[in-house]
Image 1 (cartoon, rainbow, N blue to C red):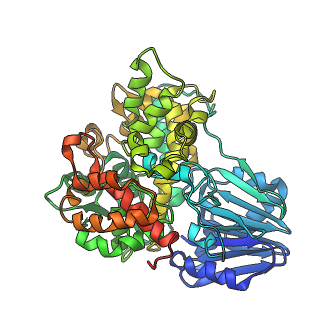
Image 2: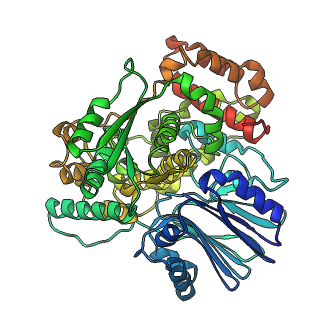
Image 3: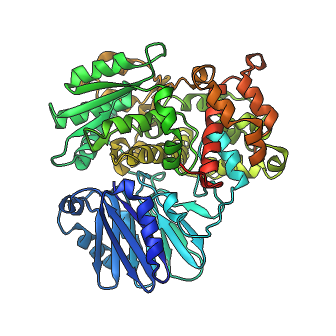
Length: 580
């Protein structure tokens, strides 16, 4: 895993030490801090030095230049990979990152110039902000917030976005002066003026070779996916897989087990026999692939004592309740393995079923449509709180929100761009650049990183992302069948029921928990007194949610309560400074 952090301007040893300390869960005990009169770069290492160097992770100083990388750069394994990357930088300047693939963030200090970059899909994160004449950066927001006096003002538009998406889309964060470097971008800063942001990884215009029929595309997908797994496979360490029993994690299991026969552990999470689960499907895949399989039970009485710590690790409020089982499962797995594969990427890249309502509305939604009808339909498809954002907010905060600008406006550039022209590809681009890079990958990265685990998401490989925009749309969605190409590629490697069944998805039973085991906890966190103290949410509406007035017909109370509790705990820790 590891971490990078730093800042421009004169040395400040105390600040560097604080940034290092708050990120130490990511990097064990080895820290490198390179300070100069014009900037400081720090690195925390998790793996043995030789292994870091072979992965392209680590830090190296060459004269007045310093390079630091956290994560994994896919390149021929070499003990001099960092030197090779500096040589690439010398030849091509900041654009050298176009030649890199993998899951990484990097920083280069070249004299007074600072270069920051994030991998193409966003498998690792990097945050930055300006304060007191410095540009500060860190792999997690908590690193940037270690500078004394950094303003902690909540951005009103971000609250509306959070309630609508359950995360903050785009480069903004919940705080006004803190930013997330978008996936596939690099940032340059010369010590004065404003930083310059450049997008280097583009996939929407993929114009690859138009190969033969469907079988040729399936063969190409299988080969590139196999390569993506092999390139990310650790040389000697044991590996694990988060196996839900769904198609995507099952395909990852089949490929990893093929390359590591008899040496793979799989883990499935569930919430007790009284709730729906996919354990039987996960068992079937594990048996077929010959893995050492384990089922992990998660209940509220187990995770509640750690909920505040989990939200502290999130840094940004993410209202998807799947964060909790991700965190608990990672904690359990960390006792046995350090590298864990997952199936993230199948839905956004290869036509998940949540695209179907959008396609139906696009094709058959009627003649009279206002300019933002697609944007509104997309927001409604999240089924979070878009329809009642204004109802959830207190009047003073409600007055600061302009939905056309703050909600639909986020999506306008994606729906009205010329490329990709195909509507399904437009949806895929949104799901990769917004949902993938700002929800799916950061959520997994942060929840596993909290326990020192290295997450691996081969379906988000940059070549596979490009491939998904080169292939015919019928190989993503066809006749209501999703992810056709993945199913065709692995139909002989997995049990038939895994290929044939529609996507179900892991359902965290928050709806039931808030009527039982979490009821008292929710009422305490979201009491009228607490809501009055923050002044952000409408007290009466929140109390209605807590009462579960099912006659109202809105539904999804559990999800909205989880989102509100996550935000309130985050606010108390980050804004009010409450202890974790």
